Image (cartoon, rainbow, N blue to C red; front, side, top):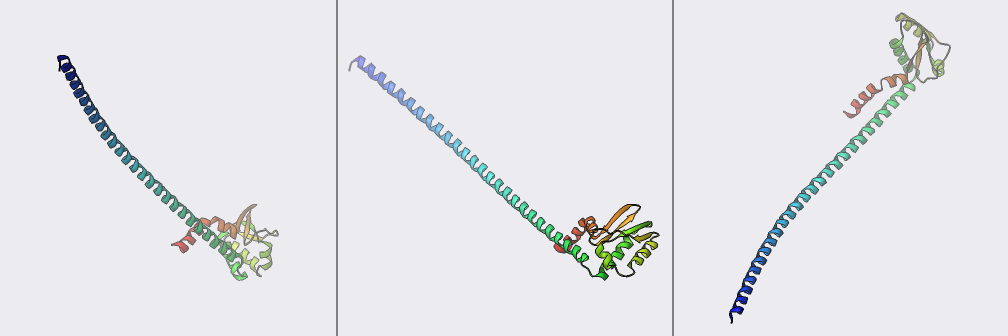
Length: 197
């Protein structure tokens, strides 16, 4: 081997060695990058998985909450329906009471609502027809006890149950319907306590 060939061989060996070193470093660098990317990908997968689990849990909680709200709403509506039905039946029971019971209720209402003034009282045509004998006198007596004067009006009112008092041109609605309407909240609470407590 000549000197030129030796030099050529040495340069080639050094070039190969240098190339191998570069390739080794590149492979190590590529492996390091690959491992780093793998770690990052695993961390990202874990983060995505945790977020997905949290999202699923959140959706499940909202669905359960919504379901519970719908159930409570349906229960409340059913209770209100039952209470309304009970109050309606009570109202109809008052209207359909026998004459003695009915006019006893009217006596109690008169005792409560008659004022110490001069006035008139109006009834429905049906009540005027079935009014017991002497009831007009009782009305007058109840008013006198309160310091007032009450006469049976020549006019009637289209009402169902109860009466209308007129004092100085001002009418006071003392019908069963008006009583039920004014006490609806209180009556509903009592029915609720009786039925659902």
